[in-house]
Length: 117
Length: 108
Image (cartoon, chains in turn green, red):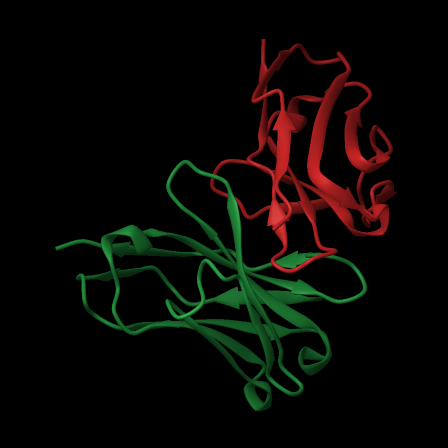
């Protein structure tokens, strides 16, 4: 069974750093793209970027370039989304999603990130 | 960036009725790369339709997609109680991939 399991909810202060994770199982993790999607409270879906774990080829949405870092460790089938300097406006649910021949056919359960002083 | 505009914002219908959701792109999108998702409160989105008209695995045949170029449609032939949710279209032809703002299908 294909699964993407994300790390748990986080509460952080502005200016802090954070790295959340997405662990894939039940398929060949290296050979499918993993995307990160943001959903701000009560809002729609925003594509942040995507990584191919086999070679770490990464593409960012220009709106998020420089604000976050997407990485992956294929040896442990895990993708990451990282912030160095969190802002209150980063408060959102972050989803990882798998993409191969199809668009996002499997999604993680989401990680709620709350940034508040 | 390709902007996707969904209409209406909210659709108020009764179970058993037909729902027609629209997704209009700011520039032509290859139909190969247009998808629809369903999202229920507190859940991750679920892939319904890819390639504009192909149903994803396990999706009931009351869901159908159509369209080409800049105009795409998701149709739910007869609404079941579990279909009341928010629906998003997505283009994955060009980077950055983009989503529409969503259409909420609510019980009338």
